[in-house]
Length: 247
Image 1 (tube, rainbow, N blue to C red):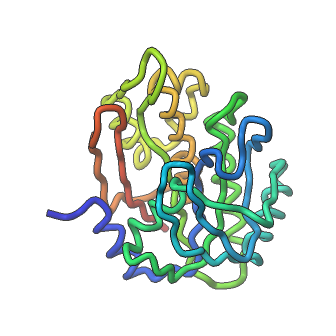
Image 2: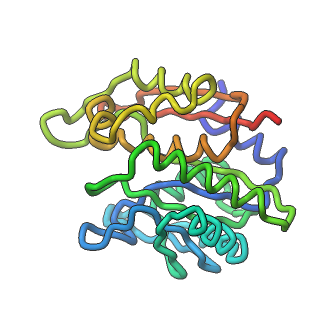
């Protein structure tokens, strides 16, 4: 039986990417309620992990790609995105754990660019805005003349709510429809407001905004090379998809 990350791990070994753009949400390691950017992009030479207060072991630092980071930042600003540019930045579990799934030995053969989306505090960016962010990332990478292979890694949960009256809420039907839409109708979820998405997926399920930005960065058509959906514990649904652009 294949482990959840095995297909992606083998694919990355075959593809041998040079740079990974990681679209994720920060959980209070860099930004807290007093300072919460809508979109933040890293432009540091190195990114370090830090304990988030749970005794989580830290990982080896990640090498940045300042040149491509600035290409991404400047292109997105031209597209009228108002970004927070981070020349120093720490990365939390939303960044490190997916990377460790792809490289279990935690010896990072790639450079990374963190792209952080606010899913914590209102006002959140809309699904449509996150889709446009992904399109902007695609344009920025396409304009890059460096010749590197770039992988877009989107992270974040599907339906889950960790607190409040609906703690433990999971909407499997919506999750599966959303995953279907990533291939057949990728802008399907942009019809929903962020409050609609919270209603359908739970407070933390709004993290699917990162999925939308990632999907938009892949272009008009993709093929699904791998897909997995699982509910490993009582209050969190987990999905994994490996998508490849179709020329």
